Length: 340
Image 1 (cartoon, rainbow, N blue to C red):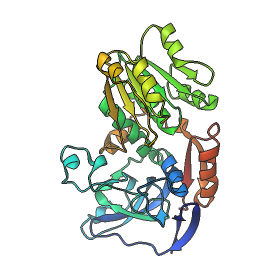
Image 2 (cartoon, rainbow, N blue to C red):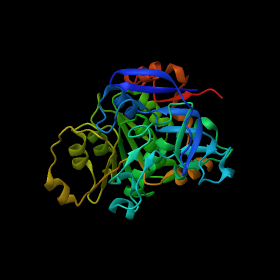
Image 3 (cartoon, rainbow, N blue to C red):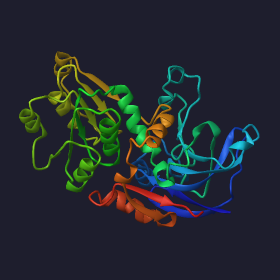
Image 4 (tube, helix red, strand yellow):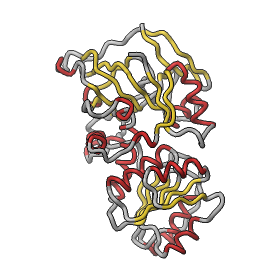
């Protein structure tokens, strides 16, 4: 038997005893070591994720060791240290055919549409389990998935060393984007804005050149003083007012990336977009970015420790969810540790 963290229905979390699963023919079974807590886990807990069905074992950011394989998988994979890409796609629809499996017409996300990694053992498609070198610590490897979100949006925005960047939101996703923009792509100047001072301090540690507390100051005033408009803007905060402000702030020929998943309506000016010939991109999950992120991490280009604020035993998951939702100043990335 094994223990699994299950949302049985919105608002009800249980740690259940379950049978240890057997991998299907093309699957591997992973013994979970670390799993990260994400905002989408909180949304599923509250019943705010329209794609989730209950009961559901949550968790889509996890690292572990393969301990059993299905009959179509090479036995040599047993013992591999792996991170799991949660995107499970069909491989033959239009988005899949053009390299966009993250918006597959038949998309399933591990931890949302199917049971995830908040469990002592989890079975996943073998092709979704990516090997991580021994040199990458286990608790760092657990953050490959969050950094893959940043890799996906930056792949669309194509940052350069000439860019002046603005990142709205210094939560876990915003910080991952800041690191990738600065330490991987080397953008010339990066400004982070948030309303929580502690988050802005973490943004500085992640490479931001300047931080603006937008509860006390206007970010547009900073760019007026700086003398250059942002050429690249990322919304990692997901507030309805941000997109229009980004359109107004952006340099002509600038690029804007939207990462949020809110259904709240926002009002934007078409004239402001076309007069500057702005490019606006949206980004969901990741499109096979795990190898890229693993390479960045192995090369020392990422600093996962700057995001990790808590490591808790998995049976403290209720504490973890409360911290994530209610303590934005103290909490960034929480890792749940599963027994060896």
